[in-house]
Amino acid sequence: DAKTTQPPSMDCAEGRAANLPCNHSTISGNEYVYWYRQIHSQGPQYIIHGLKNNETNEMASLIITEDRKSSTLILPHATLRDTAVYYCIVRGAGSYQLTFGKGTKLSVIP
Amino acid sequence: NAGVTQTPKFRILKIGQSMTLQCTQDMNHNYMYWYRQDPGMGLKLIYYSVGAGITDKGEVPNGYNVSRSTTEDFPLRLELAAPSQTSVYFCASRWGENSPLHFGNGTRLTVT
Image (cartoon, each protein chain N blue to C red):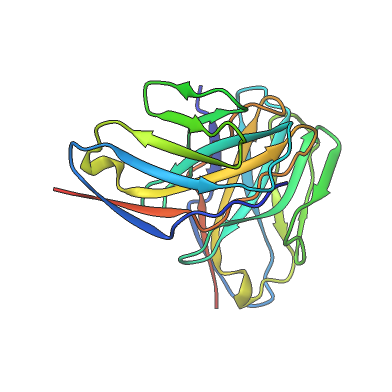
């Protein structure tokens, strides 16, 4: 599976958009990008995933660059409850393992 | 649906004791996973299963064993507990290869 690189921490003002970057420069053509978040020490929560097209759901948007070497998770209107560690994971089709790194700790500031 | 249920929520073990962490899911998911998370760190994969009767090692399998006799259950066994196994253990499941993972709420284990 391709490795991912995320900044260790970010701040975002409440009500503003939070843009969380992820670099996956060694991604191959059949590898999906997944985003999860972990609030305090609860089990991680699935947010969104995509292959090459941009995706949107009720929680967030996922923007994947045309060369697929990086992606951005966008939380359009961050709230205090969005304070969490966000994990970007790349998993290849046919690979059963999902590897979590240290993620980005997002702090939403009032 | 209860989702992924882990028991117990907390446990303290003495060095050398053994225990089984239970995980069950009611979503008829084929794939199940065990992760551990040490303080301030990401999740590390211990074992996984792609279906009943099939298990495989992840990154950090030493000191652990698993079995998958039914689709619903995926217990994790610690035979000789060591302080290095103090961690939070998460069980997860998903239906297919590209489906999202569903996590349980974790078991907090302390070995002293």
